Image (cartoon, rainbow, N blue to C red; front, top):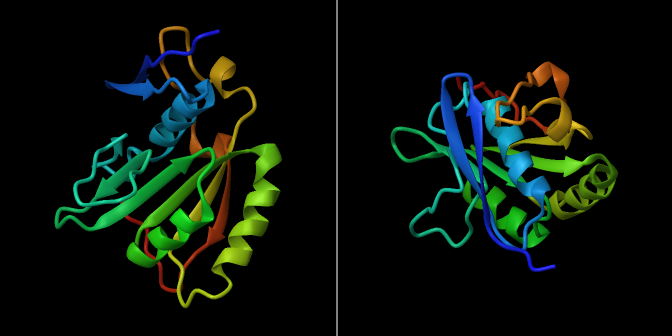
Length: 168
């Protein structure tokens, strides 16, 4: 079966967003991005989906920048190399990183992340969002309306720097 690019339209109360799924990506990617947007768009008002960051080797699935251009939030869904994560952690030490993983992948990701960061001097704020098994069926209407709260999702605070303050 030939896979093609596809656009998904999701609605979050008063606004809609378009998420592009590339031919090589699974539906999980589109829905995981919608999940992150639903969970964090009120906390990070400048949150953008699939942005193209100039002068950046790596591109996030979602990110938010401060008024001064400082990276506040970076999210990756699905597979991401440890080399990429290490470089991002060093470059954006004060950002909030979100990684979305399916439940069966969390333990391996946690183990690999722990091993990779053992030598790093400092780490940013890191959360692992465990993708709800029935998110697509239970929390997204056929019209694309997304209904979910942070309390309904397992979010593992993997690392919290000393003196960290939440951005609201």
